[in-house]
Image (cartoon, rainbow, N blue to C red; front, side):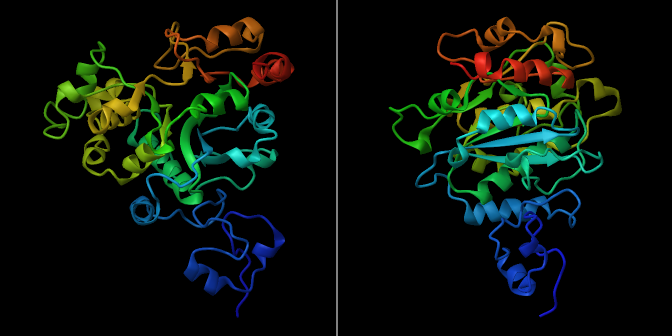
Length: 348
């Protein structure tokens, strides 16, 4: 058989680069190295169509795995993964309880993180832009990759390159999978769902006065953080959904660009319509909006990092939960965060 240089789009092992079983492996959609075909580095072949991938989920992915005990950490980024060393320390010793997936904007040249948990975990990506449906599509693409990659993925946490952990991995895992939890297939999704916010009328008509009708009446329109932690059944629901996606992927009017943030509306609206009782209505990711600028939250700088800041970020407005992640941190925060990682962040 003819030998091809790149057998597997994900694995970097020499065996997969010189695999002589390429035609057979291509028909089976897997290499002999067993790497999932839907994972790939940013320099490989063009990504498969989103519709084709979501159809694979419809046919292949069950809504509840028999033993669902892993957390899928999905990083949506358009710059270097500066905090990869901190996340690597967070993951250390728990390889059987998590998976990492990265959607990196192919229009931006990134330095690949040297840490093993991120190696070979880049999904087939497309360009993204803030305030654009491409961010929704990228999140759906990450969900598809995570659903197809491992049936043990029970939770799907969407994060950015500016996110950092606020607790140890065991603390997060215990919060997501309480020892007394009845069944994994009824686990809740941690997604912020808000109504009645002052900016919502302008955002609802950003595509036109009646553009969202009849699928999304204004009284069902919701807003929330784009960073969520979805249970598996809701992740499957998102990638299968077509009806609302056709509305939210429409471009906003030129005069409404300042009110166009579909990534903050699609997921809360969909899940509030489909399963309001299955959502906590709050997010596990803490964001500081006190001095936001041009729609961006406060960005913490290195001098602000301290044990007191970590304690403040962990707190929520409710006594029933704590925040597990936080954003937005500047790259120069890596050093100070690593310095207090073992003594503060991961010491629960």
